[in-house]
Structures are given as C-alpha cells and as structure tokens.
Length: 366
Image (cartoon, rainbow, N blue to C red; front, side, top):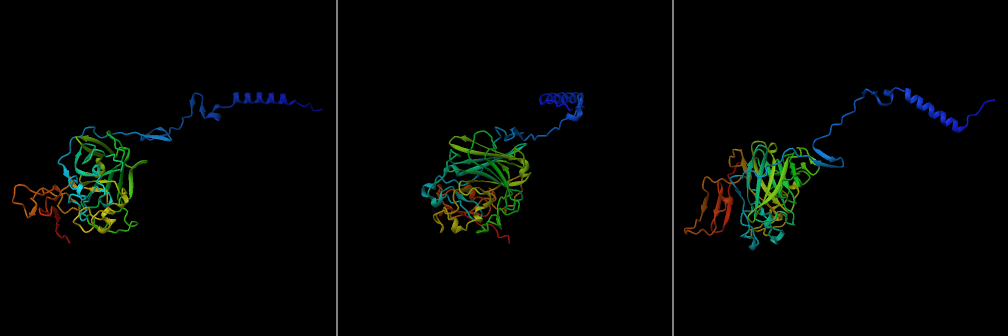
C-alpha cells in the first residue's frame, strides 16, 4: 500500500531541495560572471547639457557672457518720439520703403509706449559673444504691454535677414537664457520678394519669414549658451542687452535691432510685406493713410555693417556720415528750426528744413 506524505511534510521537503540546489548552482547562471570577476555593468552615457531629475532637467551652461563688457562704439542712432508723441505723430522717420518703421504707438496713435521707443544701439564683440545694447527712451522694459527686443542678422547684405535673436519679458538684471529665442529663415523669404521694399500683401502660406526656431524653451540646437539677455539702467534710461555666440553670425554681417509689442510673430517678418500701406496706416499727420492701423507697436532701426565692406546699396543700411548730406532751403539764421536727425544723413538722403521731412532717393539699380 502506498504511503501518502502529508502536505506540511511535502512543503518542508520542497524548501530543502531549493536550498540544496541554490548552494550548488553556478553563480554565473544567476548573475553572470563569477564572484571574483563579476560581469561589467552597462554604462549609460548621459548628456552634460542637463542635470537634475529626469523629469525636471536643468540646463548646464559652459560659458556665459561677460558681466561688464566694454562699451560698443560708435552708437547707431534711431529716431525717438518723445517730442512728437504729444501731437500724436511720429518724429518723421517712419519709412515703409525702405523698411525702417517708427511706430511705438498703439493703433490710431491712441497711446505712446515710451518703453519700446529705441533711441540708439551699439555693438561690441569679444572672444565668445557679440553684445548688442539697445537704449530705450523709457525706464521699464517689463512694461505690462509686453515688449520683445530683437536683433536681426543679414549675413550677405542682400536685405534678407538669416537669423533673429529675440529677448522676451520678464527681463532680469543678470544674464539669462530664459525668454531668449533664436530663429532662422531656411528658405530666403524674410524680405518677401524684394527685401527692403514692401511686397504686400504676401501669401502667408508661401512666405513664412523666420520659419525654424533653433533656440528657446525646450529647443537648443545650437547648444545651451547660444543667446542671452539682461537689462540695466543708466540714469533714467533702460538698456536691453542681448548677447549671442559669435559663430551664429560669422565674421562679416549686417545687424539691426527692433522692438515689437504688437505682432510678435517671427513667421510674419518683415511686417511691411504683410500689410499694404493703406492697411498699415501711417504715424505722420501729413500722410494720406494717417493714423497707424494694422502695423502698430513696432520700432526698428537701420542696419549697421560689422566687419562688412558696405557699398551703400544694401537694403536698410544705416546712412553714412560722409559725404555731407544734400539739403535744400537751408535757413540763413543761426538757429535751425528743424535740426537734421542722424537718420537723414548720408548718401541719397535730403532734409527739408521747411517741412521737417526726410526724403530718401536711392539710385535706380535696374
């Protein structure tokens, strides 16, 4: 007769068998390698770009801009509007063709935003960065309306900017990459069909301006240190500073600046290609399309050459100081009622002292 093993006894026997097998089982079968020569563990290479928790990465910077870079020289002046704003008009420098817009005003000239009105800018270059200092007429770049300050880079002088570097609020007094964005034009259409001149209205689906963002929140194609921004005060004037890596622009280029508190869409630049003059309006009372309409809250300055041998025909190029400007109706009295602004000096610019107006007459290159 077969003897049955009670269940508790069977369980106890099973435990003993498992322990015996474990003591005699090769260690390599369980863990790989041997007790004296364990198998190497896989080393996972992690990028040095981020630190912190995987779900909350922290950008690790390898280089930062100088806290006290030398002052750029010389200044590039833009028209400012503190004197004309009480009359609800711009100072006279707004040009739709070429594209140098002077409109730090809300639609219908209802309000002047002094904090976005650019007075001048300067450029300085060190071993690592290009520094652009934008001097505003106001004291608060963090104006509640929200102002973007940007730098545009034309790499070959054809008027079609290749890159734009934009700083967005909130501005801080220490260098930071927060809120700084860089975008490029991959299909050569920032200037529409004719760069400095208006080609409005362009088809938004065919012309997409700066169409590829390469630096910004979550995007660091060019590395974590590509572009920085900060602001500082000098007297009663705020200066927004933007620094970007030298390799972005190369060794020779043209550079311009702008302030935008209205459109703020990279894909729409240049804005004079999006609106006809009638749609855009004008900030000058003596113009038929006064007041400003669709194109408002925007101020851009002329472009200055950096290590670039300009021939004088580059679109949006800043006027030169030589030769002296041609003027008409020059007052004979010692006091000049309408001083010539710096933006109306140089080749092809004529200042009308009676009407306080600047005329730009470039040669016909066709």
